[in-house]
Image (cartoon, rainbow, N blue to C red; front, top):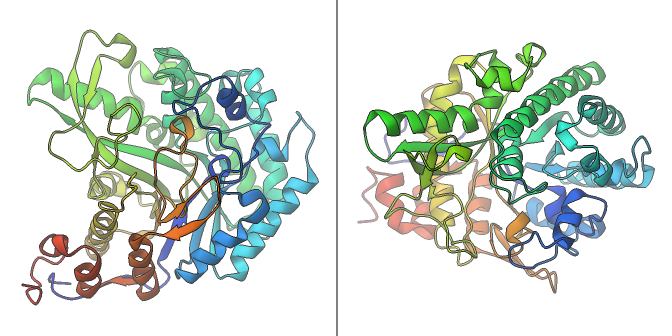
Length: 454
């Protein structure tokens, strides 16, 4: 076992990559509910997605960047709105473009992971009620069957939903994403229950079409910590975790939670429909019990003081609370009992000046290495994201890219963290030399027994 003085060598075949999503990078996504949300004034910065990172016309320029960085995995999503622009009507040109993208990745020795729903969907589906519609399982299932049938020769790794908990939270509790409803906890759980049933149907469809497929969902995890060590704040932390982190996990594992289970509906068919644990993790937040917050289950969230937060959003708030890559260990420890491999599908920080991102990468890598040494099965890490993109309701204000991207000129400029991540990927390891070069202030934290830098 590494004693903290030498390089952290990862297992052969470990996946180093980046996560992306269709709406945030493709551009001209006019047929989605998000495009209508933009035009209705839903973007807090007043931005429009426009060409985004122009992937629909030229994703290959960024695939070249990923290849040159030595990455061997890339997660992208397909746009349901492009593939099925009208209910029951499929667009062969859209499928052909996605085939081109996947083939281009494979040509560059980059393994694609395809996400089937990353927050956006067709306007016609939204008008039916989206995941509150009685036909949502049928509608989503039709799209999944068509898409996977057309693409499975180029991809065997599938994410059904990206962050269903965030989709429901932002759309039905906080109101920052379409359909922009606030304080509707019953709808929140109904949506999640229906998304769980959509996921299960998709899981079985994919495996019927492709027996060796790896299928899961990407769950967003927040590390909730009670403000005070007393009964009510501890209860608030439990409520927050059960109602956000654990809803999909409980459906998948068959765990029944009183009251919540009745709101979700019958989820028996959802049980064990995952082949790996897809983990999205950014931060942690303090929570306290607050009787003035009934619409949020009496839970008040607050940012930990004196902790790294990344760039504030346009309203001056920390987007993820404390940036907490070490939280990977909390999630893995908790879910290891289900005997599934783990894939870190998103981890990153909004950081225009690239001051905190190198530490986030180093800390995440150190955390994963230590877990692997303990025998946990972690198969890959995707940093969010490759190039700056359209950050949903926050527009272009938040800079998550390893590569700086100007949406007006489409110019790319790698940040120092891109070189850092590239060195890690090419070596399949993190070394003291890399840390000393890119994040020297973290040497004692990442390599606590390495003394040559003193």
